[in-house]
Amino acid sequence: MSAKKIAIANQKGGVGKTTTAINVGIGLAREGKKVLLVDFDTQGSMTKALGIKADALRHTICTVMDKALEGDSPEQLKCYMEEFVKLHQEEGVDFIPSNSILAGMENTLLDERPEVRNYILKGILDIYLEEYDFILIDCQPSLGILTLNAFCASDRAIVPVQAQFLALEGFEELIKTVRRVRKKLNPTIDIEGVLLTMTQKNTNMTRQISESLRDKYGRVLNIYQASIPYTVRLGECAQKGRSIYSHDRKSPAADAYMDIVREVMAYE
Ligand code: ADP
Ligand code: MG
Image (cartoon, rainbow, N blue to C red; front, side, top):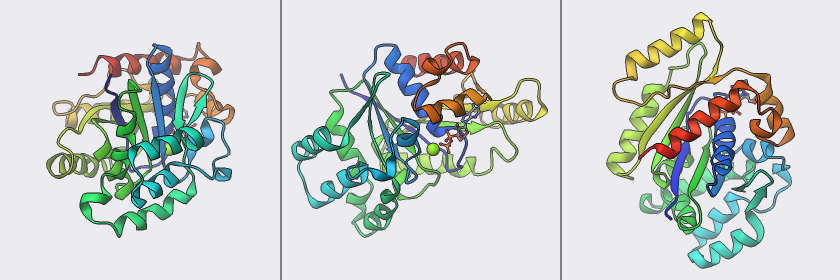
């Protein structure tokens, strides 16, 4: 087993990254895969949406990174994570939580040498390569040093795009960043797919964004056939700390996310 590591990224906030990380992650677990979710956002939204009071946590991805920077060995880091950091969600995924303390890590990393600062997360996650089938990293809404760490730690990226006005603003920048990382920092990273989220049937907005995405990028990027419909059910999931599958299995969003799960499993 060698885990596939996938960053869920877009520097825009509110486009469905966290919702996608959780529902693709739990969807993979439902298909029998061993899944580790990593909250790598300074807001700890994924941690909260998995039912944990993020700001009360003393041990998070940030404290693991501190120890890695202090020179702890992989064995020491693993012991620490197993005992204090890693959590389990009842629907079958493990996760590494985050909270606002991670914000301070940006400056800490910027003080490090480039050979070190971009690869701290990779060093931590590679400890789990043989234990999981998939490791999904929920990135924060920026293209700063933390997201670069996520790209350096990943084999692929999934980019959720919200079917909304200005959805593609900044998209070019994101693609360029991934290309630059591939050239200079991590030759294996690639964009696996672009996922349209919060779509509304028969609206001009959804049609326009979908068309311009396919027109402009359809030849160079994989735009998933399935898209995630807008539904208040997904917002409710976050409040309850659950996935769409246990909250409302009949929701069209549950089927859509399972379509994406199958594409993720088939991707090679
Ligand atoms: P990001 O991680 O990119 O900031 P989130 O996944 O947190 O985005 O989603 C932003 C908000 O939109 C959250 O309140 C979430 O519950 C809601 N949301 C996400 N996907 C959908 C959807 N398909 N339909 C309706 N609301 C959604
Ligand atoms: Mg988020």
